[in-house]
Image (cartoon, rainbow, N blue to C red; front, side, top):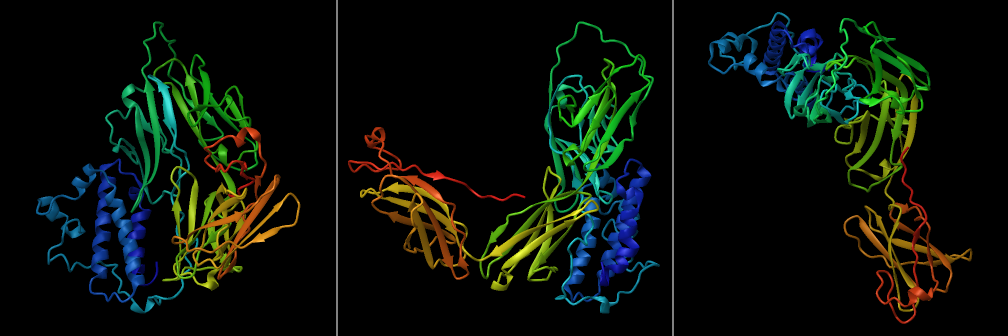
Length: 574
């Protein structure tokens, strides 16, 4: 941040967000106290620093709001037990003791507190409100959940691992909830069964000796941020396990499991990697391998099981995840370890190649990106890098739930003719880059066939549907029999409903044989793409000629059978 909020950022927010206690270590009472004291001081400084300062620029308000939201986000998601301890009711002795920190509304005597590192603001540092700012890729990397939602069904007594692989969460709290009740708030436990329900350092939730009561459709791993958390929801069904007559083998639990090469492995796409699990438990237990709670055996032809080791050949992004090895010794809580495999791969982009819009309306171009490490995304038009401009162009992104994808959005608030043209979305990371082109246009959309109806004169009425944000001025239908010369018809132009238009074209007196027809439409910005060719037949099969009630054919005595075949539909997803 620049301008008025720089002193706040340097002396307050930076200290808060970089402090180890604020990064989620709320397990110790001392850490919580430090966290809340820093939050309170930051809040008080923000209010004090902004009071009496002329807020003549929206950039100041936006920056101050950003600082405020970071402070509030650390408080708003804390469990009630923490909040009640840290924010006592107004008027209490504890409240009066904490007024100096801004935890309660300050009295007149405390409003004038000074801080030795307070710095006067220089109003000259503010940027012009209308100055363009390049916000493309300059913000901190957004937090993400890379694991995918799972539905797990196990028997009572089994061990369950619910993965939650996250990235870029240093400044965020990661919590586990069951049915919207906290199990873990970072490392702080809120379950009385914390010996059996354990949160691993990699944020996975392990449930040992699962019971029927553990079943739920709502195990949620959440990255807590304002205004909306990023959530991953797992479903767990635990079936009651009939009592076993036999006595399970007794094994010694004195021993450890060692993983190879380490508990977290990063590998670039295309490489091979071998994972191992070794133990000195006696007698030696059977080692079982799982990937996201699914058995390795038969999971993927590129994942090869060899005793206590597995080899992944030519890894790709689908091989990312939690690989678990379980020392099956017949006990209720078998020893377990996990390896978090992170695959680095160059960005992949999904787009709509053509975006239809119109003059004076809002246009939105999207670019869905998946990558690891997270990609820096930039927008270009006519090979010139675009920047965000107030009142004209907005650029932002959204994390897509239950996926490793980010949706990047370029929004043009008031589209004009000069905004039409080719746009490029470029995504870069350390592995590589990719570029995809998108055309923003004002011409009508490509027509699509929507129906057909026979006429009494052995003809046919074909119907198409299309969109246009400007009035349609002309339609042109081309049809022919076989490979003969094209015939041209110009159907009547009728008003549409909003931007929706329906075209009807009557083709009279068809002869037996195979026909094809194509439609295109025109508005002030030009011609649409031709519709996909559609074929129909003018034959007279005797068995269908006797039918009197047909959904697509009227009965005048002799019947034309229409066989409408959609040859192809073009949808682009790169």
